[in-house]
Amino acid sequence: MKICVASGKGGTGKTTVAASLAEVWPRPACVADLDVESPNLHLFVRPTITRTEPVRLEVPRVDRDACDGCRACVDACQFEALAVFEGQAHVFPEMCHGCGGCFRACPKGALRPGERELGVLELGATGRGQRFAAGRQHVGEAMSTPIIGALVREAARPGVDALMDAPPGVSCPAMTAAGAADQILLVAEPTPFGLHDLGLAVAAFAQLARPMAAVINRAGVGDDGVARFLREAGIPILGEIPYDRRWAEAYGRGEPLAAHPEMRARFEALIGALLGRADASPALLGRSAVMRELDAARSGRPQEAGRRTE
Ligand code: SF4
Ligand code: SF4
Figure 1: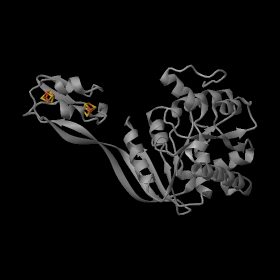
Figure 2 (figure 1 turned 180 degrees about the vertical axis):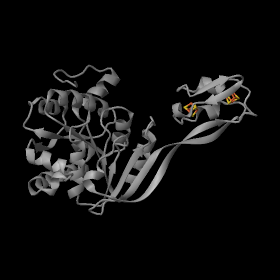
Figure 3 (figure 1 turned 30 degrees about the vertical axis):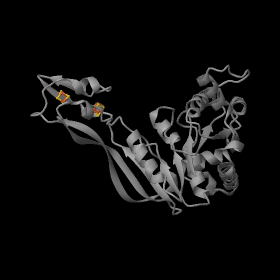
């Protein structure tokens, strides 16, 4: 089973939940930090890194003898990564998304494969002996999704569960992470800000058609807007982390909350619920209300009354 712990924004407790799942997960797993811009899961699972691997993107290089400046590659590139000056094509490698379109468009075969290094993978084992994978995007590099894709391939090995800590937000990095999961576990805090960003996350992730469930972090502050929203969206709340100074202090010391007996029981119950959902048939799981709403919108059917997605 591949679980992606995600949220609509940073700071909701995503890594707190991922680290505690890793602390008490009962089966072989790969614990993967997909937040390659600012990874911090390692602070909690204390891995030993045994291997690093660069992640590279294929970018074009121009063969000056073969290029006649026809501009076919410039017209094909959707990312403005090519331009023609003085009768020759020039590449702006940092703009290239590695789509390969220009190679196919060039009638002279004047583009050769080059590469740009985006970051590195750090691979090893957690302090509990689970596999560990994280990525680090190079400073100044804008492309993170190929690094996340490489991490997902590392994490998703047969016979091993994947516990993936997603990047925050709902842009391409988070969608890449969530799209690789069998289940998306949303972490939300019960505040108006939390509700706003949870609404964005649910609307975005619903398009991936993955079962979603939620954990409410800092339960006890704020209001019941998040719980009501989740109920209306048909997304079960599988656990709560109470707002308590002890858990904030444990976080500050880099301790997984599940290392404490009281919280361990909560996370064991959460894992039981996740595994139970994985064993349920798709028909039993059903589709969340948000997914049904999207289906209705796509097919042009009127939406059912009384339902909200934001
Ligand atoms: S590989 Fe794609 S993004 Fe990169 S220069 Fe060619 S067309 Fe543009
Ligand atoms: S399509 Fe090929 S020949 Fe034409 S400008 Fe680009 S690299 Fe040069």
